[in-house]
Length: 107
Image 1 (tube, rainbow, N blue to C red):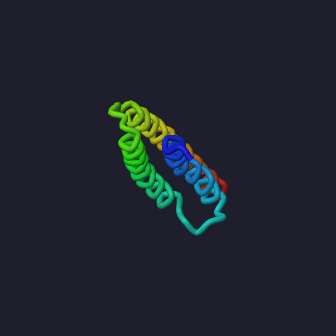
Image 2 (cartoon, rainbow, N blue to C red):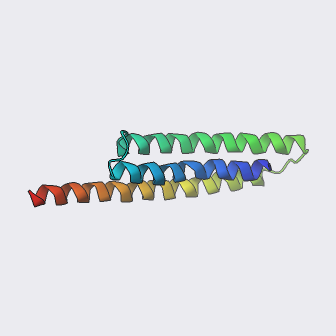
Image 3 (cartoon, helix red, strand yellow):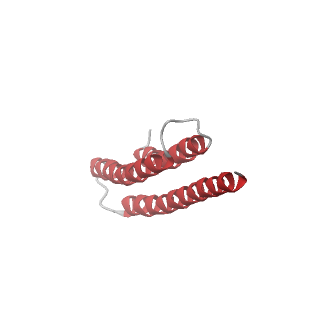
């Protein structure tokens, strides 16, 4: 598999993880709390950005490419996905707070 494509999939995986496990946490179908899942995915996203950059740098070195544009593209894509991840976490936190308030008001 192309290292650039693998790096992109690697960077997208924490977002998918957050959406799936965050939703399961909101539905109380998992033992993990939403805060723990959010912290784990943000750390994982930063680590995967670093790993992806290193993979592309190694591949570029093997091909004798001296341009840093693929690494720069991956950094900007990673920052964009990190922003989307933070927005997703914010929405999930808002849903959790809304449900807690709704349950508190109903009693």
